[in-house]
Length: 295
Ligand SMILES: NC(=O)c1ccc[n+]([C@@H]2O[C@H](COP(=O)([O-])OP(=O)(O)OC[C@H]3O[C@@H](n4cnc5c(N)ncnc54)[C@H](OP(=O)(O)O)[C@@H]3O)[C@@H](O)[C@H]2O)c1
Image (cartoon, rainbow, N blue to C red; front, side, top):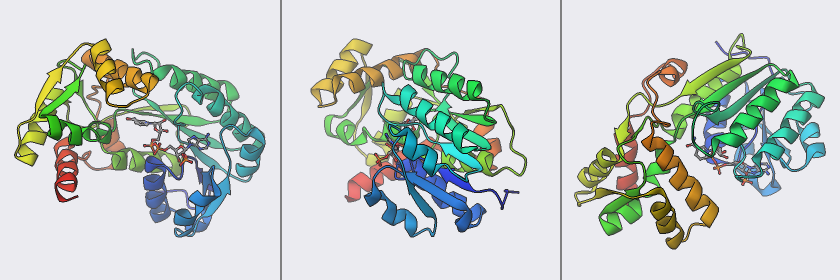
């Protein structure tokens, strides 16, 4: 049962995860108890269609954040997207939540944030520590990989007949964004919030990138093979394809960490939170291939 009386706010509301969270949240609690944070006024229109309140605030603007968080009982802080700036941005949000008297803060972290070798985790770990130090009752959603991270590269894989990476035989227990969104709503709206809870979230099934490439090939009816390369070579290939150097290096590091098991998890915590099996990764692959084929 969800708490129907609390006032909720979701940050990152214009983003892909935030939009899915809000669509699910308004099914669980009255829309008048839901607010969304966006940084650009032009992002407000699609959210107003949900009959929710839209507040404006940038993670770089502590004053606006404190104003935006006034009167909020439960806050979902969706991690920011500019790698390298996030610890400071999240700290602004945490300080603002504290000053505004937020009663429960839920943060979207990364799988095993405190022990994973993935470089991306440093900012999540620092954010978790800042939340704990703030004294605000909180829960951490340690989200594993989105399957959509991997389906985003299906188009070039089909073009070249090769899906490249540096994950070796590492297995990915990824889940769909929709699954993580529903988990966020379940934790945020719980009748009795579980203060201090840490949820390691991942898909029910895992796959190697060779299996992933084979699924693309089968769905598209075209040959696609996984081509493994070293981390530096993979980063170079991504950069040659047009990605900025730091993003290319971050993706290659994540793949190389996956080779060591960093993105595999058998806990099934996500399934338990959402009350159904996670979306099968092959289903997400097939939907992505279909969309490309009919585009
Ligand atoms: N687990 C995974 O596999 C995975 C993969 C990708 C990302 N992530 C993390 O999960 C988060 C959510 O994922 P997503 O797919 O929804 O990402 P997304 O679509 O890029 O959404 C990011 C959201 O954060 C907002 N934002 C960024 N900087 C901000 C700032 N300075 N002030 C206020 N809002 C700001 C964006 O607003 P605008 O619309 O104005 O830009 C957008 O609403 C990401 O930001 C990232 O930290 C996780």
